Image (cartoon, rainbow, N blue to C red; front, top):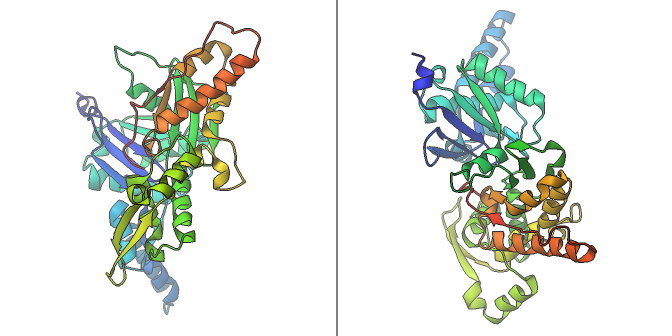
Length: 385
């Protein structure tokens, strides 16, 4: 009997910020690790600076340095820790904005995922990998080439991430494979309409606002207010503030008034230690608690390059889909990705989208079948911001 059929398939969900990996049938991922690779470049630099007496010696030194550089690397939290403690390790982020940018680093990352984390033989398991909705066919072909030729996997399936998010809520009580998936990740945000399990490719919308933009915006707000956060630690502090304290408000003006009237109730204190000296420090967390997630609903506060709110993007996505699927798409909107986990994010999104739909119905003379139901479901969430 084929051992691959009797053993669970390996599932690796590669994201811009984090990678989730595990085995088919598990309720939760076995490992969640940052998508980053740290490579020791000292061997390569040493071979370049060493001039051998003969060409053969120089070639042998370069070859040995290349082999050592291929072996001395690490991924995830270990890579971040080594880069801070040792300057010879350079960080490489293989995925940018949802697309693989460095294939050598991506291959090394998969190698560590399979052998070091999951500790399995790739020849004995089928593999399920995920990709961004707007990935080019060439990227999919290169992924298959690495998996089959380098790791010799017996079978491979590459799925679109939003379709898997929609399928995660597919149960006998609610068997709907038609809906809109709002996938807000760390590096990219996609609005993907799915009809009967198939992606409507011509209606996919992508916006340049993601979880990392929220982190950078919070970092900017804290820096402009003059909070005493160490510069080398400011990005990490902004990320933790986003994960621990941020929420979505219903009205920005009212929220400003609440903070001004009762600052002791709404302003939080962040306590940390400086990485270099170890001295403790504190800083206030105020308006950025609700202004961070607000960039999805009022993007102009972060910059003038993109000003279309997320609810309007979702409405345009559904309106560009075939007319016979629109009512079902409005009825089943699924949130996916860590940046949809802000408190009351789904309520704010549903309220704003309902306003857009109602305004369109009121402006038309005929109701065309009555009220359109807008429903946002939150049963699919990746537990990483």
